[in-house]
Length: 450
Ligand SMILES: Nc1nc2c(ncn2[C@@H]2O[C@H](COP(=O)(O)OP(=O)(O)OP(=O)(O)O)[C@@H](O)[C@H]2O)c(=O)[nH]1
Ligand SMILES: [Mg+2]
Image (cartoon, rainbow, N blue to C red; front, side):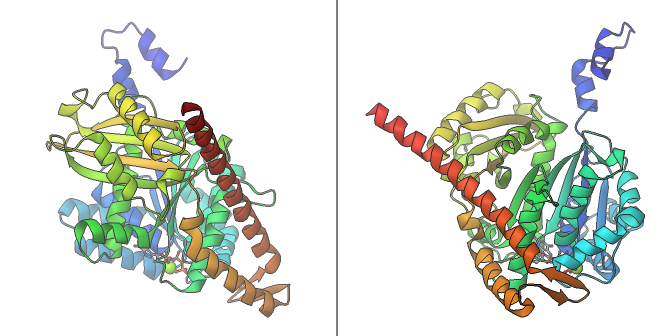
């Protein structure tokens, strides 16, 4: 009998209500962050957002000890309370992991080799020690410009899913992939292409790797900040946007009126072989003045990557309101569904979507919206890194004479690069085909209407 049924059938005087039980049995999350950029995002999240769905299940991994320490010192300087400082101290003592040796110097292959060599003896147990159980959701974070995070995270996801450790299996992996600024050096753009491909599919048989890949482009988020807030954005400002999106995404599992949760989000996209998403966020909307449609428009304008929202095949919506506004006005599950369905018809190509309504204890009269758009055409998103990938590949081909090049301590073979490229290219082509077929459908529909 499940815990829920158990409580339901129990005749003891103080029976836990189904709601209480559901509240207690929220989806548990784990954050695995590898590399410096990922470590900054994860530690900021941990100190700023108290989240019982995550509790202290967070691990900062790096191949360079100084990077981890510097990240935490940096964060400590910005801490605003004793509580935050205590949390940072806790991460330093209990939630960091050193593997490999001395950084991967922007060579993803090196980060991957570090993880491969150290998985069994250094990485596996600390992840197990976070207390994971089947069905938990893992947020795997990597900044794809570098070598350590980019190299290790796709390998770690694959190894958790298909390795021998039973307690690491059967999780849902949501990968958070941070793309370099468009002005960053070619090698970082090259890495990003390889990283995205390896997050999507990995291993000899190129199986689906992460269950959902959330793409965030530093340049695009910076642009949103400049437009909306008029400041010159630093990593810290970008990371604040990222953690807000993450927090909204984690929320439904703990406080939600519907039962729709991230677990429901991953099924269909995987079935369609279309599981890349980007967060689109609109926050602090005054309940008395801003309608949900307007917030949705703003969110779509604030997508975290360069993309055309029109081409999105899937749209998931999470709306967060203060508890006192729950089930009032537009903030009922039914109303939000209706509004969102209308909005989708006008704004995105796909009809597929789901809605979660969640609440906070906030005293303000504002609501937040996280729109996860998925399956969209990746061409505008990947334009710049793809170009750099191509030219670096050409150089690699020449330097290696079709075999391999030696970079620092690792070999990078042309064969591997071509395989990685082929996988991503197929995925992009498939995306384009699906988007086009939806577009055609829409044309037919319009002709019928005339
Ligand atoms: N959004 C965001 N991006 C970051 C941050 N720090 C670094 N980056 C980006 O991350 C990329 C570099 O990756 P890092 O995470 O520093 O690299 P690493 O995984 O530590 O790997 P190596 O240092 O090469 O061993 C660049 O594209 C940066 O723009 C951060 O705090 N936030
Ligand atoms: Mg580093």
